[in-house]
Amino acid sequence: MVTEADIISKVNREGLCVADIMSHEVIAVGEETAVSEIAMLFAKHKIKRVPVLHDGKLVGIVSRADIVHAVAQGYLVLRPW
Image (cartoon, rainbow, N blue to C red):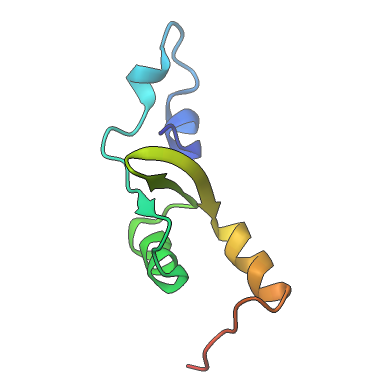
């Protein structure tokens, strides 16, 4: 996966291919992963998106914005501190 930080940190170098800048250790989740666990991954690894896999194949990507949208739509409820 190529992240925004990967691109920004290397944008001035010409002749680079995606393999030169991508993250090699990709954090991914399964379709049944709890949203709370994904939120903790976002915070712990300072990432904004995570690939969702089914049988090792990409089936989607969940983002911080997706979680915020789910809260705004009432699908998720924030717990009190």
